[in-house]
Length: 343
Image 1 (spheres, rainbow, N blue to C red):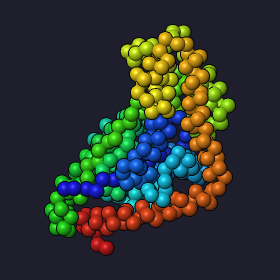
Image 2: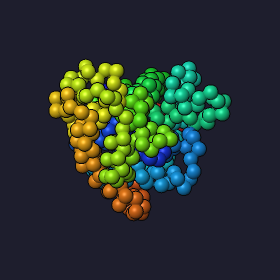
Image 3: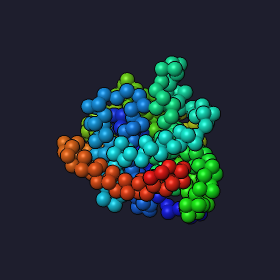
Image 4: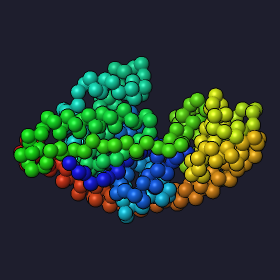
């Protein structure tokens, strides 16, 4: 069965958006809107799987929305909204909780990592998070999802849930005149060269908002001076830059900075090394400062401007949610008929 191509992606509003979020996700969202119809969701229901201060959560929902718009996502051509304004996410997640199997959820590595040793004390929401993620995507019958490595397993689970729903309810789907399969099996859109951006202080650790050192990351709201200072202080090694990618092996900090330059400049790593190979890090870092400030400075400034107008951001989210609801309501009407609910 043919499904209309549609991209869905979500970003959690858990504060301090940084360069890794921009290069790993938001920059790609901007590019995808040129070729696809897109829904970009601030997944605030996922955020509360761990405790959030309500006032902080509101601010962070608006901050992610501001980042989307400041980076170049057009909320008039595409749909930008927050998950909690569309009740279909929660309703379909419950249906999927009844389709998914405990054994499937027990295999999810992200829950094990996030819950840590004190698993008994983790929220049920954190455990059932992948069912909600499947509902986020399939509520719109999205066909493509840009994902990082850490979410690939959840997307595979989404495909499993869609497949099982289609199989379990095949006679009802057909009886309701909805063809052979109701849900598509969404495909991953895996990122380019800098889908994984590492810490500026430790090339073996992912850039993270939870790192205690602010020097480990470039926040999207950092001004030009702060961006420059963090790049100059970024950890390197004493060797000059190699002229070929092979020479970056075993040099995680060098590889990370070259990867960041490549992603910001939209160049292959090989081209970056052709330009800077054999030279000192100080020269390369100076060029990286110029590039990062040119690319990120305007985004940070526009984010600050938008954040000063919360009513404008809320209007974007309200409009996006109203448009998302039209699609979601159509899906849920069909799901209720397929499952056998009376409406």
